[in-house]
Image 1 (cartoon, helix red, strand yellow):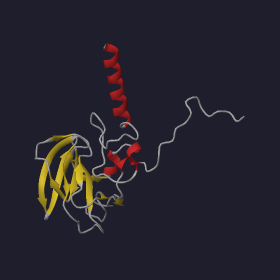
Image 2 (cartoon, helix red, strand yellow):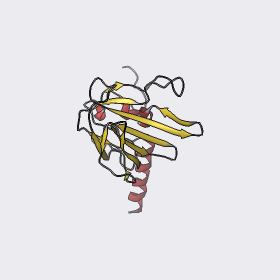
Image 3 (cartoon, one colour):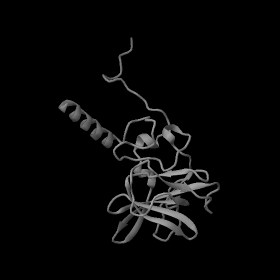
Image 4 (cartoon, one colour):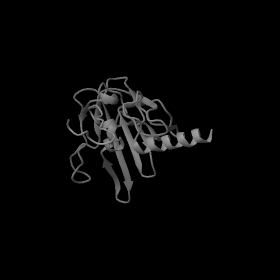
Length: 186
């Protein structure tokens, strides 16, 4: 019994460090982890990125302060990381959901009809709402996913894709190498 407990603890720690099992059937990583906020048809449930993050040169400069992911109206929105819901309401006529995932990090989603209340604790991959409709800046219906770091100088926008481990972001299949190196030619 003790060996099994130790082994399971080691596996859980390894999965948390590696970002989870490659090619697993679920978008969520057990025990915390990370998840795509909407499901897509790509490898590992990867949605199509309609527009990538473009950091502004200045705090008030032009840029794209998040990532737009293809998602139809009514698509399920999931927590990209474990955290606490700190805002669920309307801003400028759009539904917005904000999760605090650390002392100085917040994830934002819009346009979203929240399915969780402020104060709720959520896990990665847990449904938190649904996509409401189109945003003015998207050519199609999308989910705008943002990441902010709070600091003394105010909020700084970060690329939300940086939350996801490389194995989730990758578009192609995994490549396996021999355990003992490359065999010599015959």
